[in-house]
Structures are given as C-alpha cells and as structure tokens.
Image (cartoon, rainbow, N blue to C red; front, side, top):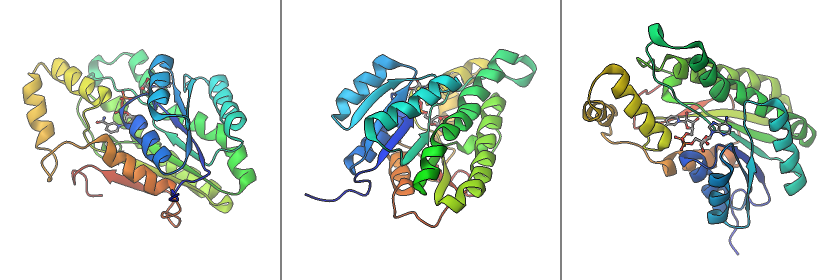
Length: 258
Ligand SMILES: NC(=O)c1ccc[n+]([C@@H]2O[C@H](COP(=O)([O-])OP(=O)(O)OC[C@H]3O[C@@H](n4cnc5c(N)ncnc54)[C@H](O)[C@@H]3O)[C@@H](O)[C@H]2O)c1
C-alpha cells in the first residue's frame, strides 16, 4: 500500500461538481483524502461523487447563504470527524461593461466569488483552530491581478479574494492554519467557455476573435487544464507546502508573472 500526501485528511471543496473543483477532488482523493463535494447543483455533485468513489460525498449548498454554509461544515464533521482542508472554489462569471452593468449582476458576482469565501472560511475556522492546523485554499484568478474589460465585477471580486487571503493568513498563522490562493489563467471549463461567449456578445465581436486573443495571451501559447490547477492545489494542501501562507500562485502559462 503506497502512502498518499493527504492520507487521513478530510476536505471540503465548494463548486466541486464543476471543472476545476472536480479535478481538485480527484487529485485529493488519489492522494488519500476524503472529500465533501459541495455544490449548489446536487445532481451534478452526486454524479461527480459517484465517479470519484467512496471517498467522495455530495452535499447541496448555496455558498452565499450563511446557514447553508454552516450546515455544510457540520455535515463534513459528521461524515469525517475532522476538516483539514477547505477549498473555496465555487465561482460565477458575468460579462458587462460598467456603464451597462445591473446592480444585481454586480451583487451576484461579489456574493459567490467573494462573500462566500468569507462565509465558508468562517464556518471551518473553529474546527481548524481547535485542531491547531488547517489549510484554506482560495481559487482566485489572474483577473485578481490584472484588469479585463467587461469583467470588472469578477476582477474586483477576485482582487478581494487575494486581500482576504492575506488578512486571514495573518489572523490564523498562530494556529498553523495556512491560507493561500491560486490564480488560474484561461481554462476551457463551463465557466471559462461561458465567459468567452458572453464576452464576444457584449463586445459585439466574433467568438473566433475572442479565442484568438485568449489563445495567444500566454507566453506558453496555450490554454490551461483543470489538472494543472489541481496539481497546484494538491501541493498547497499537502505537507510539501508548509512554510507558505498568504501567497497567490499563478497557474497561467506566464501571463501575469507577478
Ligand atoms: N475556467 C477558468 O478559465 C478560470 C480561470 C480563473 C479562475 N477560475 C475560477 O475557478 C473556479 C472554478 O471554476 P470552473 O472554471 O471550474 O467553473 P465551473 O463552472 O466548471 O464550476 C463552478 C462550480 O461552482 C458551482 N457554483 C456556482 N455558484 C455556486 C453557489 N452559489 N453555491 C455553490 N456552488 C456554486 C457551480 O454549480 C459549478 O459546479 C471559480 O472560482 C472560477 O472563478 C476559473
């Protein structure tokens, strides 16, 4: 029997019915963890859990709702008896120029991408503080480091996630809880593809034009994969990464370099 880097650990991954969250769940389970697949889409979460096997459990949660998020943490404790890792991964993207953006759109993007990161972190902190250890991994974006027309709400939310990451990292360092962010570049998941389609529509250009720009954006000249983000998340969750907190790791083919 080989040993995994997350043997005996339990993780909550929000948005794990989707592309990046699903890949992170798969990587964590392959290295020994048990994972709560926490997503608002229960059918997709259950399908994901079934594909991943006995170490995965689906749980329906809207991460913008405080009571539901508290129930999510309780469920993880009841199932696993511990919470070692939280991955704040659930996200949405909405494209609009600022001059046209509705208040509802702004609020929805802020709630799922930023407020939920606060709510979910708050829900697991008592357990992690008691244990005097823990890992919180926030999936931000390179949009949290560079601006992008029609993505102001998304960019502002992801920028906020990085500020939250650094502040929380300082608060919980005395308990050996490490808080880090990952900033993926363009990846063709449902969210990624919707962003490119909506971006083309809002800007009144062809999808091929948008894709030509996206494809040539990174020095490495290609899109990323969900597995590349998952490998970074596994590293950040594991004991291999034990002297880094408040950091934001790019997985972006060199687009940002900072
Ligand atoms: N794909 C990219 O190009 C890219 C780039 C940078 C960052 N990201 C970030 O990666 C994360 C994962 O995105 P993805 O690309 O895998 O997209 P995805 O659409 O495949 O997955 C997102 C998941 O989040 C879930 N979700 C959305 N709102 C929710 C809510 N209120 N409560 C619970 N679950 C909710 C969805 O049901 C879905 O399963 C997001 O935070 C996204 O912003 C993606």
